[in-house]
Image 1 (tube, rainbow, N blue to C red):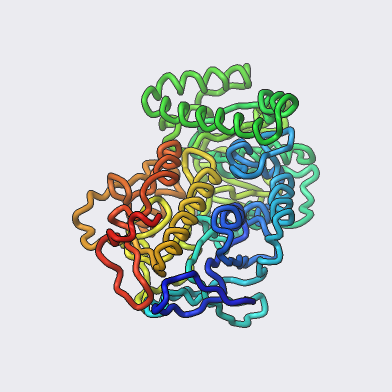
Image 2: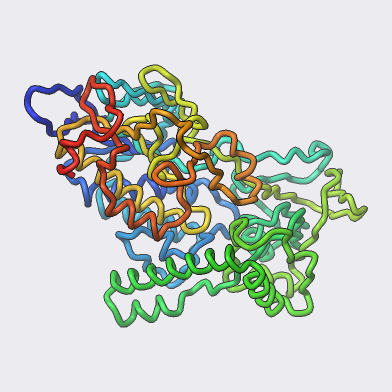
Length: 514
């Protein structure tokens, strides 16, 4: 990495030079967002991004399956600093990539991205107050770079390995078996019988998208999902864009959608039966005589798993046109010609799509060490939803389960900039959320979602307490207030200089210099 950067500090103290003040891992939504926030809120801080893939976009560059689109509205999945200008608020993958590429090019961020660089290690040295990050390129060459702060925008799932449901008889099937995470280029599915296994957002996207050419598409589900039907276009948003300046129209629409998300989630938790009745009524209206209670009545309440968005009821329209169908059953095995079900029914298939879920990964599976000691994330508590107990100068983004990913990415980036500015103002080099005695906290599982991908990964996830600041909150409205206006030197986040042991609480003399 070109250039050497140091933070301003009082005379007489030393800090090892670094290649950049902030190293951002990942050039998807989280990483690009952090880069722009640094430009806006900490413009004198140098930064660079490293991206393991050959192009930016993260999830939106990796996934190429038919119909890929956002599962939330782009007025909240879009950034706070960049209006979403497309007519459709439920956007497809190419439109989202265009949005990200425009941001990167207009703000001259692309030249700061090092592509084809996979981070394979990160080591914090308290004496030097810096991270040394080890990277491997696509040819296997190893390089290192140094930074004062390490920011992980690497997402929350395993890019290398999806969840494997381990269906019996896979080797007997004579057709193609595909996973959405590794979709083949130019797949020919014309006039083919397709079985999509799964009932989540990916399956509900793929099914109607493949009906354009397929002979028939069957969604095979073990458990039904709650669906929410909404227009792909936001009528109010498009009206406001015609009569108001672009940025003002975007802010109003964003505020409206945040409030609606918050209200709908709270109502689902407080009055689940009323929400079930509402969603069922909408489904019956969309499907008419095709409605089947067995296929569309989940055994859990709405928002115990993420609601599955169906824009313009496209999934249900495909069913009414006899291009798609839903089967609720359990798989006994794959055989040469399709899927044998435990009920005795057989689904013929030329192509089987295993949309059975993702495998979560913490910190991008990067081995992280602090002064030589490996970090086991399951032994550390979240701090302010982005940092971790006793790990200095390190932050990561794990988006909301009940709202758009970018809402968290924006407020985390703003908060980290506030911490960086505090460090510069006080001449300190390290910020550590100090937790001397974890036994004083009441641990709580805030991932109270029954989704399989969450439940399968609880053992690797960082810990959460029952109260702030030691938790990954799921309340964006309150988080935004806390992270934008709460004190940086809060008595927990401790600031120190190179070579010093982090104090047990924030240094009182520095609290005013925020």
